[in-house]
Amino acid sequence: MNTEQNRAWIARDEAAIAPFARVSYFPVALKGGQGAILEDMDGNTYIDLLSSAGSLNLGQSHPAILEAINAQINAYVQYTNAYFYNPVAAEFAEALAAIAPVACGEKGKKVAFGLSGSDSIDGAIKLARAFTGRGKLISFEGAYHGSTFGAISVSFVSHNMRGKLGTLLPEVYAFPFPNTYHDGESAGDTALQNLRRAFDTWLPPGEVAAVLIESLQGDGGLVVPPTGFFEELSALCREHGILLIADEIQQGCMRTGKWFGIEHFGIQPDIMVTGKSVGGGLPLSAIIARSEIMDCLGPPAHLFTMGANATCCAAGLASLRVMAQPGFQEDVVRRSDKMRARLNDMAARHPCIGEVRGLGFSIGIEIVSDRAAKTPDIAGAKKICYRGWETGILMICFAGNVLRIQPPLVITDAEIDRAMDILEGCLKDFERGAIPDSAAQTVMGW
Image 1 (cartoon, rainbow, N blue to C red):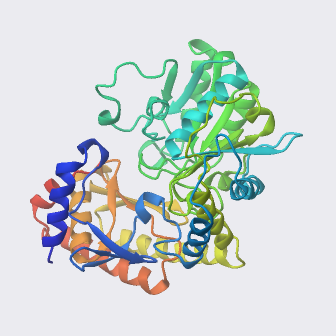
Image 2: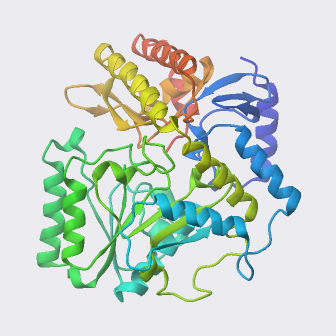
């Protein structure tokens, strides 16, 4: 494949942009795209299995989003919501509050907008500490909540995120996240026992402000918590007056086949944060909680000059309206079930696949060198991703050995069929040793 123009732009990029702002996978510089199809600067096209890290749930250039953006910028691009008011932000906040599955008090729910999922985590931490008057926070091993200082403090997925930064937020405690593939069917019970034991011995529950948790552990490998875990965790939090914060940054906006991933588990968190696709592809985040919590802080405790940007809110509102159309959710479920069925069929025939897991269009494929021992094959995952790029699909791996499959929700049946055919070809090439070791060295990965 020709990559001359891609590599020329990458050379310019690397000379001008700091290296800590990217995890490199392939030499791809994008020129354009439509729906689930991307084109690079050399004219190579790919089926998108990443959705811009889950931030483009409706794919590239959705007409409803483009129409909303154009209408807003023709009126005005933005004017700071920190001092004044923009109607589209209020309208979008009302729409988000209406669908958010957070526990609702007598005064209803409120929304606070930011710029990225990371700052929504920081805001949720502020709210939890202010509302409860407590300081301690609980997170989970493998969690990724973002890259701002507070979000990094509750993230436990990468040395490179936390190294060289000095002292992070104090009183943050990480517990194992239940992973039934590696830890067995009792993983949920064991995780809860660890928390209860800590509360009984060394971690006073009356000093814990909040538990932060992803509905599916995203960058930790798209791990789905076992049945009953969330229900018992929620009950444990209520018992001790601890707020439960659900991170829906990656799994929200219909990614899992429901508006928010937490809805699969039948609980209502106290605070919910979202980002990525909530802005319809533009930079936006939101914190949603009952009014009693949101009213515990006054200005300017958590505001941003560009927060609730009118153009971003217009794009987000248009995206939400598309997803709310009759039949949209059902079609997402149907097509994601079809994709997972293809992947499970591959798993039955390819021993390098240890497990296929996920909900909706949020799917992780664990690549192993020994299926019986469940030995992670990090180099193998990188090779498969590299061959995918060479043959027309864009996907990455994270958590070392897990293929990340998160296509736009608008991917067509024909595109699913083609992408799965290409992926199976990559698996065959890998298993017969046809992908060179240099491919694994090219892909940096998480």
